Length: 306
Length: 302
Image 1 (tube, rainbow over the protein chains, first blue to last red):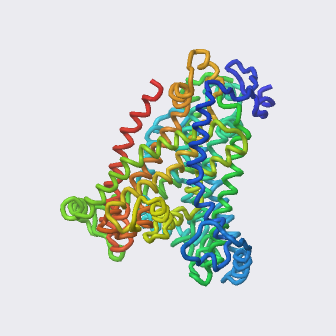
Image 2: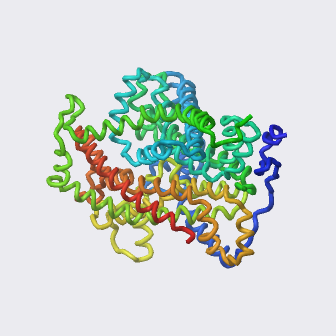
Image 3: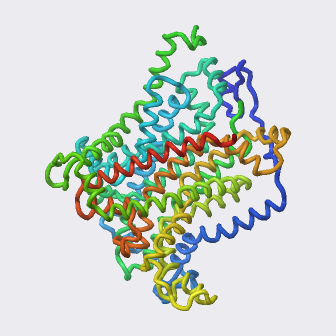
């Protein structure tokens, strides 16, 4: 009985092993006054206009013909929108040191590997820390939290030494492996997993589920908002990485680096640069929207219940 | 099968084996790429190290120099404390407030609203818009607007005038507030058991503010703690805003912060010993603040 019900994420088991359906009731609109709603709406609209400015600027710049990009005084909005900048950019892309598709491939490997690996590694480690009190668990957790407060700038040098010693310098691993062990993932996942009622886990164990199965079938589906959020953070960090001192070979460098080279072209490439800025922002934003909407789709009504 | 008996010694040992196995990949990598580098950096803070020759041990020399000789460190410390004390709590409250308001919306509207407020953190060129706004001639957006409405007669050199630097940095930093903590709160609010609200309404919770204090905030306490750490690390480490808008060095060092000072030592003067000492001081400040804040967070909903 248990195996079948475990697979369906809409059911959890109560302490006696009976399946309970997670109720999908509409969010109650209790305790809401109309005046309060109006006030909040106006506040949101005003603040939102200011917050969205950088995106507005990037979109408008990408569509500006050269004379408008250099116009003085500068204007925020475009007058004669054109896609010229993008066609300029594609010409430049065809003219890079290694084929541009190689940079894209590198970025996919580094970002994909870093995001998936980090979410898995950090979640797997967070589960015992959140749900099993064993000797050393508190210490391990506080070491991770403390480490997040040490300035990243100065640890770069020792990091470089260690990566060189491991012999993974100038490979994808030099970026991917450290990314798997960032502190943020473990902390975030542990905080969310703590909230899962013990009774759900206990009943799955009684039904004979192994710890890995509990982790995969009970814990992870219940903290979906957490790992989708973590994926957004990690995507942003890795997406912005240019390879820096760790990737020296041109054929290993990520797209961000190639884009940076195009932007470094100065005034002659102002148009292409504006298109680059657009693409550099558009991809994480797309990823963000996909993740955020699936957070809301799956969790809109359920929540965690005893 | 005796595996229901969770208290037997053998069962406990068996369980812990699984725990250690699950944690192994993360903690092995974490030790190599985080714990060791941090320990090595702390060791460097007691040495003179220029990144060419071997580090020479000089005891507390770097720390003594920071406190006794380095006037700029005192300025940087002062600016950092002002920035952290003002932007830290305000940013944090803004994150909670906006996450909570967005939680009232449904579906794709909500994802879109989240994007709107997260835009400064994700768009990559956030500071660029501020350099347009703050341009010191009369064509800067801010100067232009203020002159049009007659608030000022002459254009103000915002980033070249000492008294405006810190206030402007504070405003821009607040605008950048809705980052990591904000998204964590948004996700946390998704996991709150909705029946709690129905029960609360029956128990006499009569408006949204009571609901926020007595139900919502206690329910997302783990996320609030996470957000607090992220806020502390961000507020004490403010540097990018200052480097980009005020420049380095800024006018009479009015925009110098601990981290810009650290970057000065590490990236320009190649004095890794001093840079590491600054990082260690900053670390201790953050740890202390975190202790206080976590204590405060336990009292929510009382």
